[in-house]
Structure formats: C-alpha cells, structure tokens
Amino acid sequence: MSRPRTKDELLELGQKNFTKLNDFVDSFPPEAQISEFPEGTMNRNIRDVLAHLNHWHLLFLDWYEVGMKGKKPEMPAKGYSWKTAPELNRIIWQKYNDTQLKKVREDLNKSYLQIQKLIEKHSNDELFEKKRFKWTGTTSLGSYLVSTTSSHYDWALKLIKKAK
Image 1 (cartoon, rainbow, N blue to C red):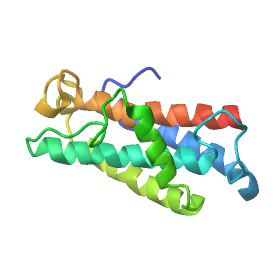
Image 2 (image 1 turned 90 degrees about the vertical axis):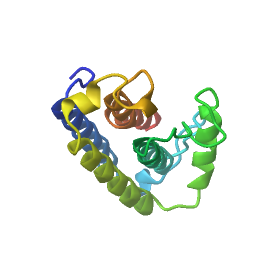
Image 3 (image 1 turned 30 degrees about the vertical axis):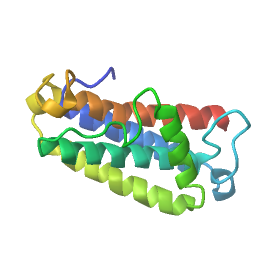
C-alpha cells in the first residue's frame, strides 16, 4: 500500500505495519530478542528500537494535546529542532537503557492504542486537509500521523531485519 491518504488507509497500514513488526520480534526466541545488534547503529537492540517508537508516539501525543488547545507545540521537543533530532534520538536512547524489553513493549502497545484512538476520532478532512490545524503548519495532521505510525514501524522493521 502506498502512503495513506484516507483515515481507513492510515488505520489499516498503521495496524498492518505494527503487527508485522511485533510478529517479527516475536519470531525470535527470548534470548535473541535481547541480544545486541552488530556495531554501527545507535539503537543497539530490539528494545532500543521499540523504545524509540514509543517515545515518538508520546512526543506526537504531546504535540497534539498542546496544538489542539490552540498553542504551538515545541517540535520535536523542547530545546530541539528538526535539524537536531539526531541529538534528541540519542537522549531517547539513553533514557531507556535500563528499561526491560517487556516494559518497553507494554508501553509501546499502550501508546499505539492511544494513537489509534486519536485517529479514529477524526474525519478524513480533519486528517488530510493541509493547514486544517494551525499547529500543523502547511502540512496535515495525517501526514504527521503517517510519519509517527506506519512509516516509523516500517523503518523499525527494516532496521531490526538488517541487524538480525
């Protein structure tokens, strides 16, 4: 499926890619799920990749909450710009270093469901009309959601496949 352009496509591809990612992780025995990746990536194991996804879900949920109140969210996070997102990703990576994979997966599932519920409550126009919400600037809410969900899950799956 190409990049989602409707609410149904956004929900479907997000769910499909999230399920594919989780099924792939589940295909490894527990010891392989926590083993380190080869040198060369910041995310050193499956936990790191899934924690990254969860944290970006949480960032999006914060942007949404602030933005829908008519305020301008600090994107991607306070003290960071899109140009310094790699530095932010390093901070995210450090934050979850002592977290168990099981906890990261629980948190990711929870934030995934929050994102899905958020998508459900919006119409196609609200999701995909550019400039509909002041806080999304010249793009659409749906574009941010594609990046936060289906595209990000696809990135994660590819990274884990390459490392494993």
